[in-house]
Image (tube, rainbow, N blue to C red; front, top):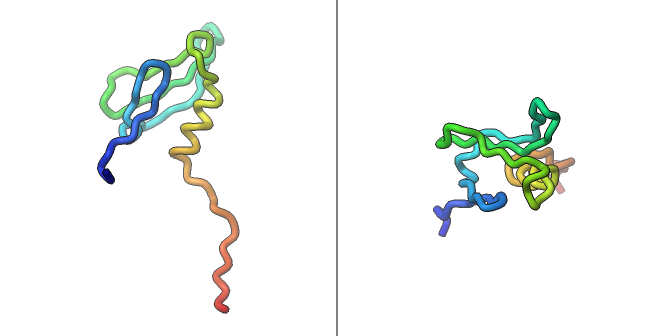
Length: 81
């Protein structure tokens, strides 16, 4: 089970999390916002336009951040007792 692949579901697509190299929010020439995801194996970006999907693109970016961003853990006390 430890070698089981992890996928992220966006709309009707399932994207292998291990293949994601970049993601974020962008705006096209018509000022339409979209979520983009670039993977190692696909030639094109996955693009999810805000007006065309049934999920909130900002919430999805926050979800992706939760999976991929390394955050500061806070204060660590190294004092010996």
